[in-house]
Amino acid sequence: MYRSSWLEQTRPAFRLMIATSWLAPDSWRQNQDNAIREAIEAGPDWKEYLSLVDRHRTSALSWASLSRAAGTTVPEFVGQALQKRSDACRMTAVEHCLLLANAVKRLNRAGIPVMPLKGQILSFTLYGDVGLRETLDMDLEVPREDLARAQNCLVSKSWHLEESFFPMSPRQWESFLRNEQHINFIHARTGRMLELHWRNQWETPDATRARWARSTPSTLQECSIRAMDPSDLTLYLCCHGGLHAWFRAKWLGDLARAHSLGLLDWKAAWEEARRSRQTRVLMAGIYLLEQVHGLPRPDLPAQAWQESSPTLVAVPLQALYHSGQPLHRVGPAKLRNRIRRSRYERLLWPTKSWRDSFSELFYGREDFRTLPLPDAFFWAYKPLRPVLWLWRWAQQMGHRSTANRS
Image 1: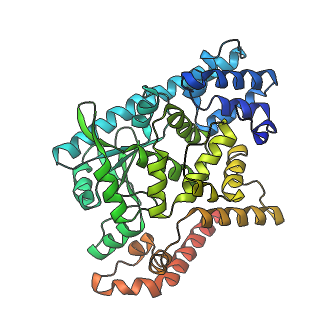
Image 2: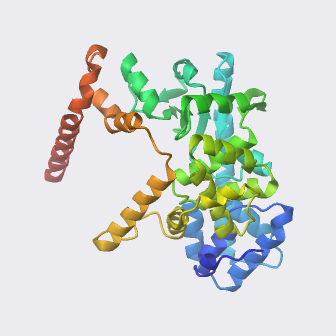
């Protein structure tokens, strides 16, 4: 088994969190159990370990993997804390499943295709258990052309739009669809959030339609849903983790479980990544699986391994190891970290056309609320963008000043 020199240099509590951040299948269980025992024998700070489990949202997975690892013991307070967190994770999962079924039924009745993303559906796909992945919200995707109908279908006594969303004119709505990826709903009784997507980050409309065409029919509590093709799931998991610099271990754990089970089609994902200019996103996920979990590389064409940059691995490793807070608040170190993160994003993102870059630069949904212009004057938002931004900034400063005086 590959042993990562990076991981061996980290603290025992972190190594234990990584070892318990997924549930290895039988083919890799001995390796996982060995990693758990070695981290425990190294004497982890157990309070630090619990804090890391909370930050990386691996409570149910950590409890399950520790409970089954032969020849290991943990302090009683750690076991009690993990079991309590795991039970809470499972209760949330049950609630999410019920809420998802309610939303999917509404969309089914309207004849709108729906594809669940991540969450409890992914947990069931990977583990056969909806309660192992810890989630705070729910994600569904519908075709872009059905988004307005889906929005009208969901809005009811049960679901309402999150307060940052508001009615938009046709031109505003068109700009919103082109520049954003999801719209948020809040469940009235529970306060849970549902993100309704119509595309993934970096996808073109043609790529989204092709992904839907490759999807397969499935069910959720007797409701009709679509499931991603293995190649699309591969790229989706890598893109989602990469977008957030892999700062939660649970995302890499998802990829590790899917990879070790053979659920992913890396070759087809590589071909799709070439077409959509996302090869670096894909390769970063592979290198991280090797560095963090010691998993073997998939069989890919020789040219795939030329898509490499130390930054694409170094930045996620740093994000994984350190807390969610900035490493340095002031000084040259903070500037260096910002430069590295900026370089990471430039390397990761597909090169955009000048038209797309220009459109994003002058897009701001908050402008539509600050100054509701009729569609005939929609063009004016571009030159007015700096003015509107300054206006909102001045208002915020005024509110803060008033609050400080009171």
